[in-house]
Image 1 (cartoon, rainbow, N blue to C red):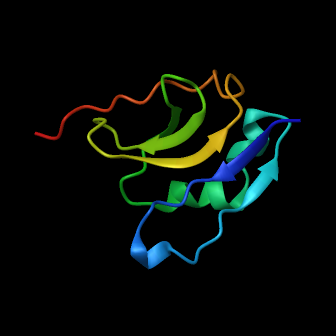
Image 2 (cartoon, helix red, strand yellow):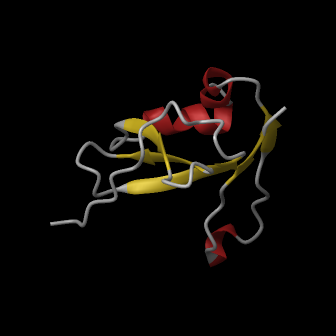
Image 3 (cartoon, rainbow, N blue to C red):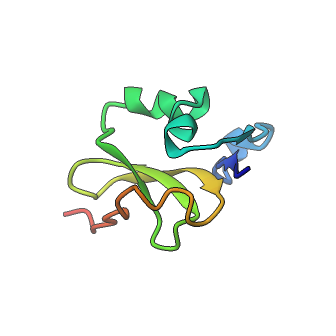
Length: 90
């Protein structure tokens, strides 16, 4: 069964935060994990997407100028998601 590990940015303020981990059997189950689903409440949230390598679950805004890594996942388990746009901010 695939596993996901929450991505915690390498910031001094977050040095004591331990990433959550979970197993998932489907993309839907992964996106319903509380620590993943909470991203839908972010003001700039547009969609979930994946890295071009397929092993990072990400969120991005509508024009692709803002994105965030949510979790490290088993490659190819989120291939149904679009690839993040990663456009340069204007």
